[in-house]
Length: 288
Ligand code: KMH
Ligand code: ZN
Image (cartoon, rainbow, N blue to C red; front, side, top):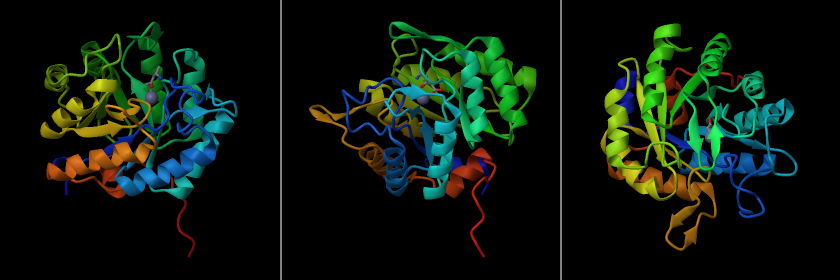
């Protein structure tokens, strides 16, 4: 099956289980330790996820870009699951640009690459052109597949500029994720999402979407109906329904899988997602 046919037949479900914004003290069920991240990955794969977007925390549960923590997490999730392992290069709003480039040293399968600066609540999520351009080139040199994070319509235009400047990324596929509903970025509405989709460069082979907070379900429904894929997880949304805080990321994955299945686009397996995104296989060969 061609990647395009696979994309319309099934749904890539990404789980973003932790993020960099929530505090463990406020949300003890947030997976922050290595053991919690690995068991979350296992449960989310079982529930229908095929890609995990990881932000890593240190022993004090604070966001870190320390290479030792990152490598340990990549290796442990790869050992325990078949999930495509994507590391965030966005980090937290406080991480310097140079440190964010070193994320690639941990040899993930994929990395996020946000296509422009955006206001992020009271803070600024900084992604100047020289940084995203350098990250694009370094990811390709290291055979890491970027996922282009689009927080605003201007970011779609910057993706056009990246493709024009550098050509296709490693693997030749172009996968983007619309992150909607960040205060300062595009709203989590069907109209904004469809405006972004209508602007996508022809080179884009697949797209997914997430709605932060309240826009979570409307954006999920809009993406499914328009042929897009899904991202869910406590990085983006900690309220499952009114009055019910998410207890485990797999609740969000299971609901996304149920909706995708109802829409006749059941979750892609990890192998189908690897094919869709042209991921280099870094898993250890099984012992003979
Ligand atoms: N934590 C945000 C400032 C990414 O992972 O690449 C950035 C973010 C995007 O979450
Ligand atoms: Zn992230």
